Length: 135
Image (cartoon, rainbow, N blue to C red; front, side):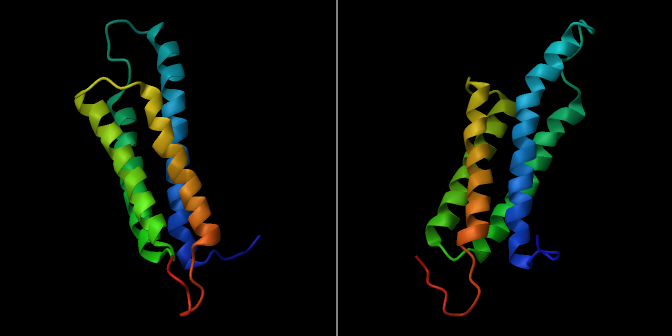
């Protein structure tokens, strides 16, 4: 393994990491608070700080997508990263504002897609010289 990670790899690594944590957060929430409801009655099912994690992951993900899209060699990758980030942001915003009813599992799609896209972008879509082709 390389001892030093290239500067261009960092946004993709952070994006994969943030999307992965978001995915774990989304998967763990029902289990953690289903167990918690048996102990506490009459209180909200999750603490306020737990809900702020969504916003924190979304912010980190935004920065990672911004820098990854800026440094990718493929135009389709820029577009795809932003589409899935917007989908993730829309789902989280909808969940917070309770605008329309969506299955909670729908959030897994953009989370997994962002993980895969960042890893793909890191491996195949980086320019190492000035002769890099735009596809």
